[in-house]
Length: 144
Image 1 (spheres, rainbow, N blue to C red):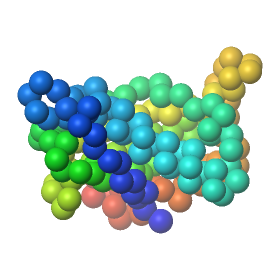
Image 2 (image 1 turned 90 degrees about the horizontal axis):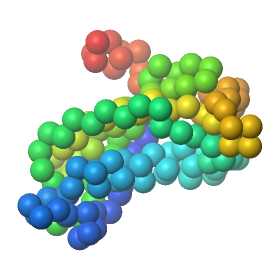
Image 3 (image 1 turned 90 degrees about the vertical axis):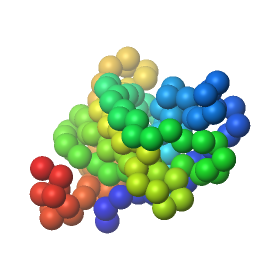
Image 4 (image 1 turned 180 degrees about the vertical axis):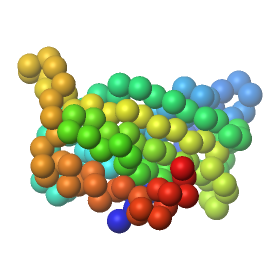
């Protein structure tokens, strides 16, 4: 299927003293996009386990150009990479109305059992859902 796209509204409160979206707020906007995929879309399909426990084990963000809140919306394209039995990487490319990427990022995600207080394995259904968002093999070769 390729990338999952989430449109995240920019708020005036996302701006910093320099008139652009603050770097830490960008991480929050990426989180809001991630919630759309892992909680909302997965929940629509009956996969509630991810919303019950999923943690970020690693985060890396490359800020490409400043973003003004006046852009209105941040479009975040997400795809899944390195899908394993107990972790996966989400790749992000964020842009504003037709612009090239203003930020790219990746998060290493780990499913987590909150009651047991430890990581858990992805279910077969969760793995199948995440596999839908992996880039096609040709695209993966282009990134290498």
